[in-house]
Length: 116
Ligand SMILES: [Zn+2]
Image (cartoon, rainbow, N blue to C red; front, side, top):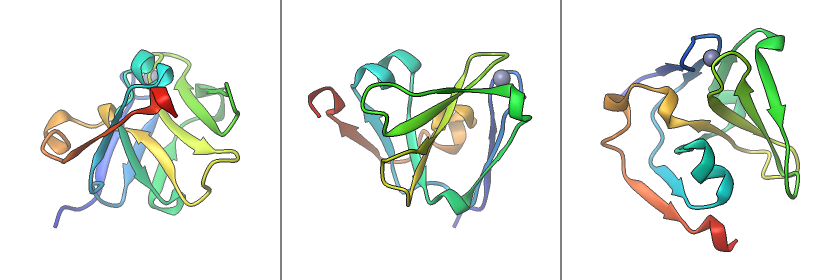
């Protein structure tokens, strides 16, 4: 069993800690995921700690306004999202914020988000 994982945006202004690796990584083909390079890991919000100064991250809300995406204002990494009207029991973290060796071995689930 693996323990907590620690990740960060490129500049380090946003530090992310999760309780344990996710069971799978989602790769989605919707425009947002494609253009931000998103690789999704999902956890209950209580299992994710985001450490960042309030002015270090910028919210991005679009489309159906189901989630708030968070972007580091310094380096531009799309680090995580939190639910607005989407399922409140989970939030998403961009797995690319972790070292590749920590998640590249995990199963990948393809999501056809472009059709949703
Ligand atoms: Zn950054």
